[in-house]
Length: 183
Image (cartoon, rainbow, N blue to C red):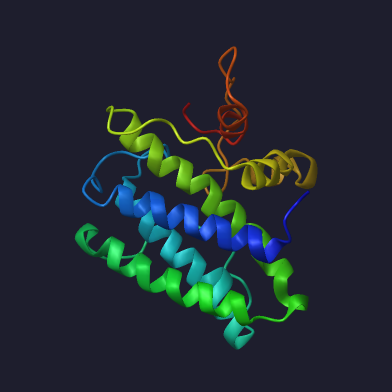
């Protein structure tokens, strides 16, 4: 059974936070996002969660949407910036009205995909195993191709060109290849 969007968002927030904290000693390593370090991904998520969750749900601001911009913060402060952002987002989402929950669709996807991107960075040098998404978030991610217009998301800002999944790839690896990640 699919989880409601609020719970999916909170699960994705928890997953991303766990991956960011696990990589806190490896922030300078490359992530699965071409040209971005793990710190860049963490700071990008702090920016997009502030612009797509915190601001719209507290002040009614328009969501920021996808962005390739990263915060101008030293990598050594990335985890602290993220932890503050995550705590604030969690409290706001816990308290938001159900009618505003559709705003969480993009941020849930962003958190889920980027949690995998962080783990890719530390797994590629043997510090961890590749991340297999938990079933509810995996089902959410696998539903993306049928819910979005492919041409609208194939850009450096959202998803790169789909990559072929290796033969015998896990479901997580297959959806990440679809999302243009180096698998």
